[in-house]
Amino acid sequence: MRCKALLNAGLAVVLACALGACGSVVSREFRKEAEPAVAPEALFQTPDAYQGRLVILGGEILSGRNTREATFIEVLSKPLDSRDRPKETDTTFGRFLVEYPGYLETAIYKPGREVTVAGRVLGTTKAVIDQREYTLPLIAPREIHLVESNGRWPGGVSIGIGVGAGF
Image (tube, rainbow, N blue to C red; front, side, top):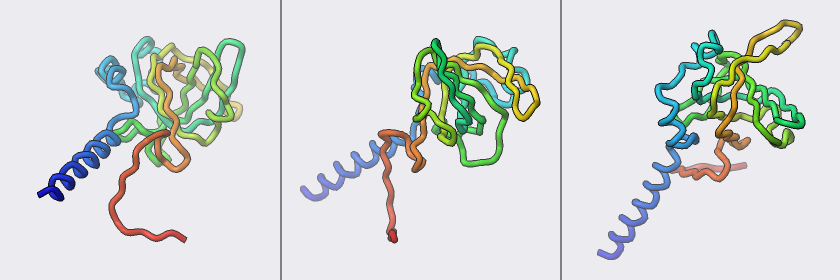
């Protein structure tokens, strides 16, 4: 009987951890405030139409630059999964620029890292990419979440079931 109670308690802890790990990386408060969600396809086609709206975007960092007032992070957008993490895909909607008011360490927010950004559309900015001018959505972030190089969120819980071997 005691063994069954311990097993049930252990199962409850594992289930709670697994359910907690399955939620969005973006805060519930922001997600609620950002309703209805802006489709990335629409945002990248007509970014000025969404000025002032709250959005959740993600992708791969292409570059970072610090100025006296802000840090600018250029991101190649990617579709997000159910946890608001960038999917591993070659699909993109385009690039966007994050304007963080303050200092972010560009050795950490560096090219190749994946990021999810939750923030407000400030408008657009012009960028020259390979001698061609583009208009990028400009985002003021409220939340920025990096993905660890092993695909896990910093401080995240990982639970697995199965048999494996390492070499």
